[in-house]
Length: 469
Image (cartoon, rainbow, N blue to C red; front, top):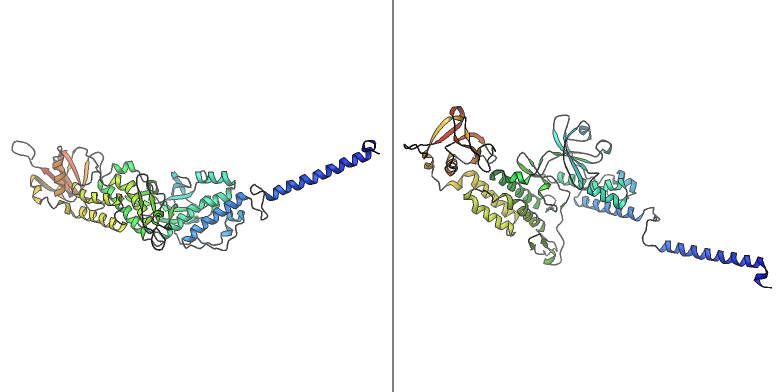
């Protein structure tokens, strides 16, 4: 009997064949799933590969804080970590120092201005109930860092936690690094319901405007450079060791009452690179490269210091120091430019050179070759000031509508007036600059004089022929 003559046998054979193929295909399919190295399938511990990578990045950020010798308090209680099931045996309290302004004080704040935003953070100017103006720095939820994180991980809580680590690190550094040229941390708040996450409360400063600074008097530009050198000397010998500013740009600084202050520390590094040979200690810049020695301890010692110093030279000194510097100080300024541009001196030696310029400038030592007798060509009227002035403008004036310059004494003011063809008189008042030097107002004429015990007017004498001496 053949299969074609028995329908039952034919059906049975087809059913058996179908069942066998189904079993084979299922085993093949599951075999592929078990051996698949990549994909979105959940692992036995419940974590997807994306979530695992996010966890790894969070742990790396935590290790950055641990390098600052800070201990974490209940890191698992953080909302972002709770959602990610992060387990750790470390306890790091990254904001442990006491600060004056907290969440309670911020509850009555009034935002009055938008100061700026970057990849990670947003900065607002706010007025507190007691009338104090501060800068509030918080996570920029619309920033590039948050957007890139969401594109990769699709986890809003986890990404907020990851991005906020930069601000947390900055708060820690502001607590540990205190210097007149670093903005003061006035407080912080971690109440997510109140301020949308962690917020740093800083003293308010104005963003550094290089164009405006280039148009300011040389004395003010020197003050900025001197403050920067003092800051870098502190960072080289800080309580945390040598600190490198990896994102060294003018935008990382603000001006507070004429002083330059560092405000962004999230990209600072407290570690100097490890090395095996000198070629590992390479400093690369767009126009120049430098190679330092690899120390016996296999560390590029001094690399952070030199990185900061050369960045100061190319971003600040080059533009601010030589332009319109006092002629008699030019040799000292030239020496500073050469030594920093070639990294021939340490930060300590550079600071000593700056302090020498300051001392010379304040004390008037650069005027020793000009005797006091040069003032004889001017008549002095003390206890009066001029009104109805005929002003003229001069470069780098403290007053944009006239000619007001810094001088050490009447002797230097005479030199300035003699160099201006339109100058016929000047006055000195009790007003002084940050160096203690006097402010002199130069003019081409005036209508009359009025009493003023804090002022003296110097008028250029006129010859018998009517010409001004």
